[in-house]
Image (cartoon, rainbow, N blue to C red; front, side):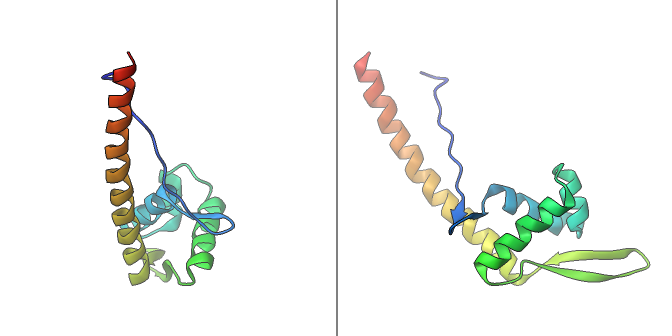
Amino acid sequence: MENMHYSAKLVICTNEKFFGPGTVELLERVMETHSLHKASKQMSLAYTKALKMIRTAESNLNFKLIEPKVGGIGGGGSELTKEALEAIEAYKQFFEKVKSSADEGFEQYKRKIEKMR
């Protein structure tokens, strides 16, 4: 029983999946690298896939997540919008509430299984 665990993935949807752990990771990597291209490479995603993820999330959320920066000597880049930072934080808070509830439920499940033995 010590090795028993559960796995859960939290994805926000409308008629399509649009905001979850992959989108959050991509946005956080954009924040670190200041580049959607670099962030997508770090995640082994095609740039077009990463761009589609961002566009899909933006479309469903009805606000921009990334603002492109026009290139200079070092080239262009991307910055997260204030709304993107708030959306990441809201997702993480929601995830923690769901996880806390799921952890409690899983402990109840394990106790019931243990009684069956």
